[in-house]
Image 1 (cartoon, rainbow, N blue to C red):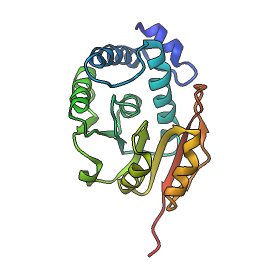
Image 2: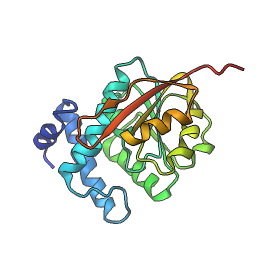
Image 3: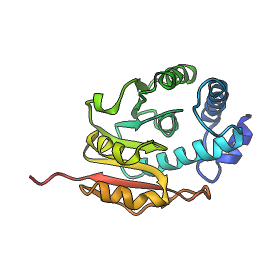
Amino acid sequence: MDTANIARLLKPFIRLDEMRLAAISKYIDLLLKWNARINLTAIRASEEIVERHFGESFFAAMHILAQGPVTTAIDLGSGAGFPGVPFALVAPEVEVTLIESNQKKSTFLKELIYVLGLRNVKVFSGRAEGYSQSTDVVMLRAVEKFGEVLPLALRLVSVGGSLALLIGTAQVELAKSLLLEVRWQEPVVIPSGHSRVLLVGTRMVKVE
């Protein structure tokens, strides 16, 4: 897809320079190539990939970055790299770790990082239980076994750090009920028309 079309489709979410638009074009080409072999996304149309995957990811990134400085971030269950890689594209000063236990998907992510020349992204090819470093922000999007993964995600958030969930509106109350030690903000509607929201919470100090 050419960069002019990408810019047009992303207009409701973000405005990017030509370098980042060109990176997205390469990303889409590689994603579609790999998607013919392994299931990275159910969405096959390039325009819908831009709007649904990139638009949502960039929207979340800009909202998170506007709330304060971020040094490190984790995309848990990264899959095809959303939202972690778009986050890294707009925040080259942030060290982003993509946690992905599926070996084929993690191999795709490593090739993607190489093709895009991203120096601030690394892949952890294992389960969240095996990752020990805490971080400023943990992001979750389209993760299976949502209720089981949330406590694992919170364990990776530094005290005072943020947990950012890209979820359907129906999952908001479940998230709040599962993580009582998080101070939640009001969910922000993502401008995609698919009943999706960004729910951000701050991990509070536990009272012993």
